[in-house]
Length: 256
Image 1 (cartoon, rainbow, N blue to C red):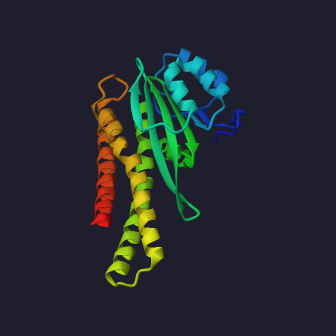
Image 2 (cartoon, rainbow, N blue to C red):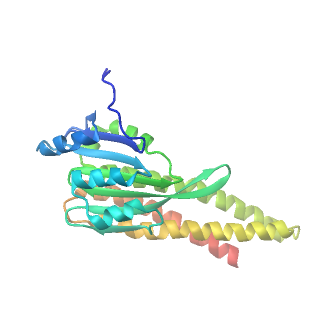
Image 3 (cartoon, rainbow, N blue to C red):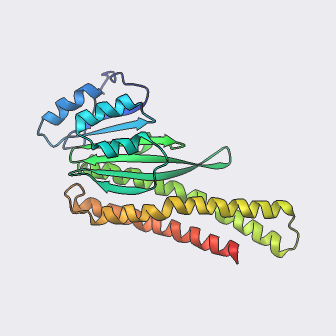
């Protein structure tokens, strides 16, 4: 058992970890990142941030050589879902969704992916990725595939969290349909119908562009995404496609 205390980190830095080529974890400070990258040993660094101060992103830009435009995007929420290539690195922005106090709230996750690093930046209502890191750390042989596998695990988690929301939408739509056909609905039924249409539109704006992001990751030939990891992205793409189709089906049902 490793009793070494974890290094102190700024509050917006949720984790700063180095994984060796076997997928074994070691906690590091931000100042130690350059020491890890200086070693040509197949290791990579995963830094997780939540609404970071500009000074933290500036520090990471210096450590990893992040592109100015990508850093500017990561500093600001309200990015559309997208994937951008900057030299030998990728910047990914996606929308997240979760239920809080019986309401659906949306957030964003931005990710920088390079040959030896993964940086995740959460904004707004976005679930912690601690459970994702714990899961992949139990499969070190997969984590050893590199930073792109960590990105896959994050995107898979995000899409999985769409599913219960779609199920709730479907249940609500069924209840509204029954009320309408029973001719027992009142003004509140109409209000709820409008609200559901609006929520479905928000969900589609999150999921539809994500399909393009995932499609590009399945075809990425830059060397950042190994063939084995592209297969995993293809699986997530299929899941996102089903979520989008379910969203469209519900929207069509409510407009007929």
